[in-house]
Image (tube, rainbow, N blue to C red):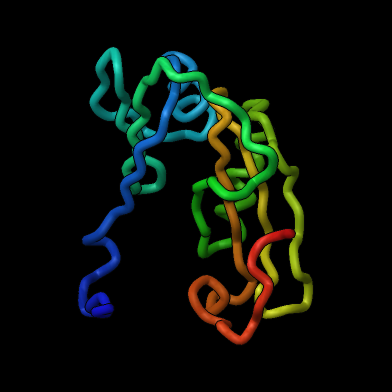
Length: 151
């Protein structure tokens, strides 16, 4: 598999994710008012959201949205490079009474993979995880460690 050129500046590339919702109004309440996303283009069937410079697109579906039995296999979110930014979003989520699927916690203390994390659940059962690693090398490195997630 060819590797991606490291000469490409990170700010030149943004992440895009499309996900299902059943109501644009509820989507705006959770993502714009709650999380602080900046809304973009909107139609009756979709809403573009700016989440910290990444593009989320909420697509209305008539299919029933069912809850997962746990955080795996599917969730999405952000990895913060500064603890204060992670704490600010955690505090915002608490102030806006967003649904915590898993309360904020400190995982793997004292290990190279040590991090802070919390999970939110949107009104459509999409799970979002927000993390801060105490050791930046753990984001993509520390490959000798075998702990990934929870069992």
